[in-house]
Amino acid sequence: MKPLLQSETFVRIAAPLAVGIALLGLWEIGCRLGGVPVYLFPKPSDIFASLIKHGPSLLRALIVTLRVTLQAFAAAVVLGTLIAFMFVQSRAIEVSLFPYAVLLQVTPVVAIAPLIIILVKNTQVSLTICATLVALFPIISNTTLGLRSVDPGLANYFRMNRAGRLKTLLKLRIPGALPYFFGGLRISSGLALIGAVVAEFVAGTGGRSSGLAYEILDAGFTLDIPRMFAALFLITLTGVALFGAMVVLTKLALSDWHESEVGVET
Amino acid sequence: MNALLPGDPHLESVDRMTASHDRPPAVEVLSAEKVFANGTRGLAPIDLTIADGEFLTLIGPSGCGKSTLLKLIANLLEPSDGRLVWWRGGFDQVGQEGRRFAFVFQEPTLMPWARVEANVRLPLELANMPAAEAAPVVAEAIERVGLTAFARNFPRQLSGGMKMRVSIARALATKPNLLLMDEPFGALDEFTRNKLDADLIKLWWERKLTTVFVTHSIYEAVFLSTRIIVMAANPGRIFRTMTIDEPQPRDESFRDSARFAAYCRELSTWLAEASLPAAAGSAS
Image 1: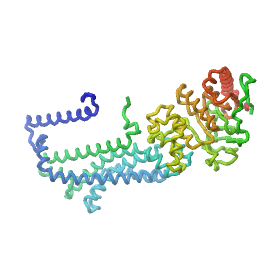
Image 2: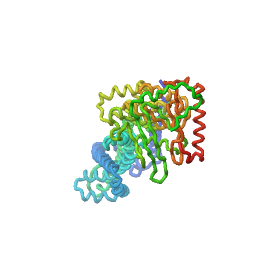
Image 3: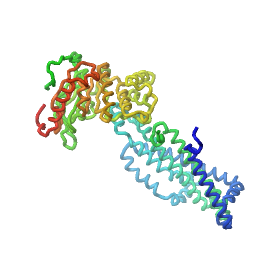
Image 4: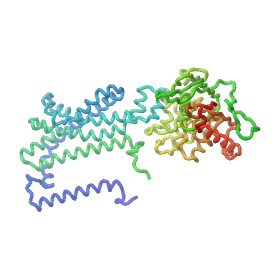
């Protein structure tokens, strides 16, 4: 057994954790020594206390945000993959529709969110639509790229063996596209959360309360800065958790064969 | 076509390649020529009969059309003029029992996400063979190339030579009658290449596989072939034909023999002549 300090996993977890604890400590000490008022910049201990105090309402908000995020992410994955499949079926379809996919990507969600929130009555649905629009593009572009990036030698082999369109898709294109698809998932999961929070802000300023972004807005109105930080902390935590889940998922799917997941072999 | 024998003309003729005189030729190339879309004349009209059971090697300088000819034989390309006949029939009958061919590329072209056995099973799956039926065929093909212990490995865990073996096993799984190989061992080191050559000739001998092999290596061509076609460029055409009439199955002792050296010397001279600009226009 290797000493703990030489274990790669231990170092990978312990080192950033130590940096985090040190920064929190400096922050706490700095605020205390400088006498910074809570309504300007709260200490970590204030934020933690607020997290406990407003636990139930923050948790409710977290669930709302998480639900919107996951719904949007799922919708983006399903829609994005379907659109990518459509794109690779014919160049004409891709050429005609791709500019609109780009249009979707470059239009800031803050700009279209008010419109969607007005048009769609149900807040939950309108927020999900906004977040889906943000999360969709990486899935489309990555999956399309993956489905197209077929090893020409293998493509030739399939042709020579008279493989049909469906068999080529199932046995060659889809497995070959997986690394690209998972790359898209990582980006898209983070964007779904960003989309959800931005949409909640827009909805929140319009008076429709929901989610962690609304908690931040509301805390700002009442100058409850520790609660604002607490909500922010939960958003960050959600983002990290989503990213971590995607990393694990990618590892499960690709670790056997793909270079990106195999790691350095000694 | 002139069948020449370099070195001692009194060599005992074994004539293994014509052991099947009674059987129709595997492929007949009838005045097939290839002009590419950009106007390049890839191949001048070529006449070539590939006898059943022979090991035919195509060799020549770059651009002499050896790969093009191989692709015509595999029907990966269509001739601009002339035609090809497979087992006295059209290409539509290829794939039936006794009329199967397999192609081995220069690269192993394996699916990186699939284990060795799944890679070898691929052509059978594409032909809709039930899994239960395919399993013993796959196992036998893997055993034939000596990779049984690696059947559950992924391609990235194998060396270059082993990957090429998988590629050959995949070709064997279809039980081909004709094996087409486009510089299959070109990217391997010489030691591995010699080893695979020795395995290949054993396989050819045991299975009575008709083989068409493209290579740049004189030694490989002489060691493996019953007949070598030397090609010249501008336009691609048959320059000369050499028959290697040596006992089979060959082993490493053939490589050390004086006759082997004589064949190689002769072939080397021919290749030099085929590469000369003056060779342009001198018909085979």
